[in-house]
Every structure is written in structure tokens, then in C-alpha cells.
Image 1 (cartoon, rainbow, N blue to C red):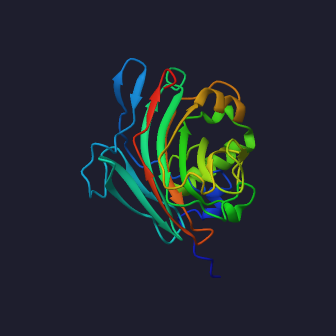
Image 2: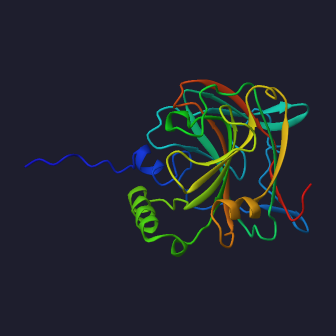
Image 3: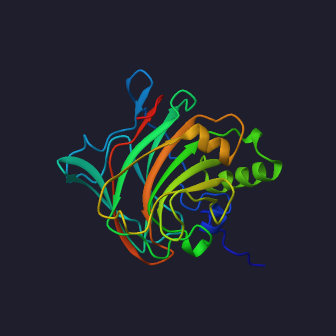
Length: 260
């Protein structure tokens, strides 16, 4: 009797069911964040990378399982500063920086981003709208013993299937369209990723937007309980569901003990 061929890679739906549709398995190894002063941690810098580079020290480009086309990316000069440029056209992928930061000591996350346009089909409420002109994930090292039995079993199975250390909880800050700034919702695939709309629509497109968030507050509102350590940050844009296109830029990111 013949048996179906087994696919060693998890499908996007399998990963998405665990809140990992746009997150990636952590690759082996990692990098240390740069501590630049008391109470301040700088994530590996885009601004020190050479213009024209397709890679940045401390960041790893990660393709998404079962997404045929990855984004194009390059370090470019913008207003005299090197930044990461991402071009997404019916594609998706992220850049991941592995960290190990006590977020209770440095709960303030600061960053800046820019997009040339919002995605008209972006909508937190539906799976077909799970595309965003810009995304920033905060990935937490949440111990599995703090999850329900069902979540522990599902995540353990996904980790075994993928052979990777898939994250169990994340916050995701996005540039959206259908919802106004300040809207929050669970990712349409899962309750392991909490989405927060930081910018919406085209009103601010084409201009740098600076943001900061108190991770302790956002964690408490989304998941409750003690906030785990930050295991990584991931930046990206995705247009694979809507078959749209966008150009996105990210400047340097920072974790700090105090607001800016």
C-alpha cells in the first residue's frame, strides 16, 4: 500500500494557527544587543551598515515557509543616514535580530519607519487582510509551562515539525489601513500574537514616523502575568495575501529604561 509523501516543512496554515504566520523560526546562534549606556540597549544598527549592502551585522533575513517570493532589501542612504529599505510585491519575509534583554529593566521600545503607501487591503479582522505596509514584532521568551495544556501541545508539535525554536508569544506593531491608530486585536490566525496599529492609511505616508511603546504595559494588556525576556525583534512588510506592493524603510531601534 502506498502512503502519501510527507512534507518535512510545516505549512503556512499550520504555523499561522500558532500565531507564527509572519514570524519565523529562530535560526541557530544569535547576536548580542549593544548596551550603549545605563538602562539603554541598542539593537544591531542599520545606520552603521554600508550603503548598498544586502546584509547587516546582527540581522538575519528570514524567508517564510510556503511563501514563494521573498521581499527585496537593501541598505540605502536617506537624509544622510543608512537605513534598511524593503520592497514587497506579492511577497513576504522578515529581518530578525536575536536578543536576550530583560524587558522589565528596559521596557521602552523606540523606532522609526516610513512607507511609500498604505495597503488598501490591510485589515486586522480577516486572514485575507493579514498584510501590512510595515510590521515590527517583539518576540518573547515565554516558558511553555505558563501556557494552557492545549497551547503547549500545539507549540511543541510545531517545534518538532519545523525543527526550530518557534516563539510562543509576540507583540506586533503595524502600519495598517482599515482600523484607526490605537486599534488592537489578536492576529486573525491566533491569540499568541497581539496586533497594535501605530499608523493607518496614507495621511503620513512618505514621511518618517517615530514611535515608542511601553512593552510592560502592552504585554500586561495582551497576555497578563510577568513579562518574559525579549528574545528578538523582527521587521518587515508583507503583501502576499493582497498581491499588492509597498516600499518600506526602517531606521535604528532601541530598548530603554525610560521614555524618550
